[in-house]
Length: 81
Image 1 (spheres, helix red, strand yellow):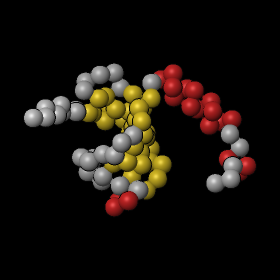
Image 2: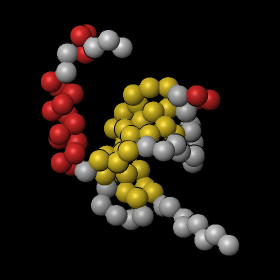
Image 3: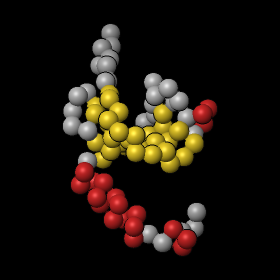
């Protein structure tokens, strides 16, 4: 028997869409409170109704600051992508 805990979330603020995924899903950056905890920046794919979600990453304020510094230091045009 499996007791699956229900995960609750509240999108506090939609920060932006960074790409389009499969089946109309969008890769979004949002400020989200998971299970009534302190909000974190969250990056993941969402369906258009914000009911289904993919695996993603959540970042604390310190992690967002570190990520921003790293991204600002990258010369995107020099990357072989």
